[in-house]
Image (cartoon, rainbow over all chains, first blue to last red; front, side, top):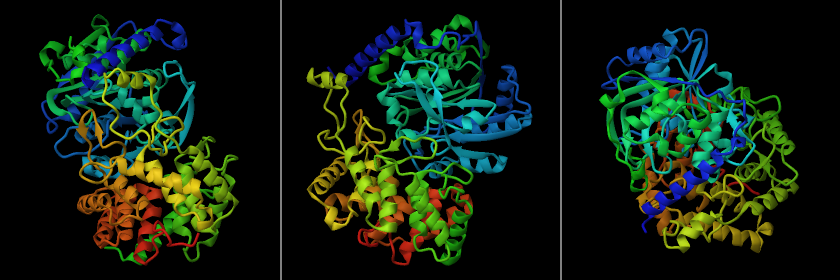
Length: 326
Length: 312
């Protein structure tokens, strides 16, 4: 049996383990969660990073009815690495356009924050990735969530087997936390989207580079516990060009031509998976999160804008995740 | 380009202005005091004329925050002793005040944190069944982790090496030297095929990982006694080529300090740092500011990360 087969087997074992845990309601605090009966997700076409991104993002925010005026916004893009021939990060143009859009809608303040998973030289990532000029142009500040002040938070669910995690303080001083992932396949988690993106609010100063502590407690388990405790208020997923194959770093660009919006991260991530031609029910953390955090069933998600079928783009996945195909 | 002395003065002023009332520094101004930026700031201020009070307050902060087990926490919020930051703070104490009980306790803590890569039983089982290839690294070689009970990594291991190698001769007993030798072997074991170091392994899922200037610089500094070893030479060649395109002031600082130790030309890095200072003001980072000061001191012949540069 090859490693890929083992990965598949391990994933299935993980799914079983997670499912077993999921079966017991004591894994999350009863009453702490009110899963919405239905969720809205907007899929809007965006052909490139050059044209009218602010307009598309304004439309996405308004369509989902997100109240912005007077609020302090923290945008959390996915900023991991920079390599000239790769599409690893949330495109800086999307982040810049989001800053612009939130300011136009009357936000009191818009900051950008990220705690890259394994690079300590965040300053270089800001320069090399091209994000810095957008920050300067909009007057928005950046906070390195790896090195931020930290706050101990009791977890509201118990999949990792620990009581509490430290989280970057800036997350708590924002009224609106906006997760801005890149739509990518992921060689350990299947897909990395708005929920996996929340690993970036867990400070490296406490958990290291990479945040190996989370991996040791299980990636799927960590994703669920972090998102049950700190739920992003809104998602803007960059699927203009996603990543397929051996993501989140070494995969290949996959043009998809969409931005996906919504205030239920589980619903947005499930929709992104469907757009990529993958079955969210087979992605452990989405299926478990769908039990109590948000909606992953298609029938509970009201799609606004484009239909999934009209934008669906089959993403390639590594051998160990072929079973995620719908 | 700002003249060296002028930049040095600006950086010193920035550090002094942003020292917290408790004597420490946060990673950025107006943030809670943390031990890593404070350690670098203390090293940068050791010989700063006219800043003796600031320096003394920093040392007092460090002493006040040493835990009962001899290490230091990451900051003033989390009181748990941190495996990775303790040797760095120990190095700051050692190079500032010389050997003493504080360092002795720190050594004990650092040695306690040394260990082998813990193995997940499921992965063990899969290897035993032949379902999985063995790990890409030699798990028999010990090193240091970011957090207790998790995997060992290049960066925290380099910090520990930097500290332990600076202990005075009388403290370099068999236990310390044996630990150092094994940790050195672990760092060499993680080197990328093309030279240089990634933050972690050289391969993941069959794919070669690329090295980074920052981790490569740290590893080269930690392995500075072996300049002519093939691995060091290969990594040095990578670093010299990569640093020219580097956009991170933090990486440039470590690159400059590393190249200086290996007696390589690095004056161009000063120009790159100067450009980045104009463009980003080092993102207001206390740690980068302190490191830039250490680079400017290295230009004057005092590279604090070079073994023997300061009497310990």
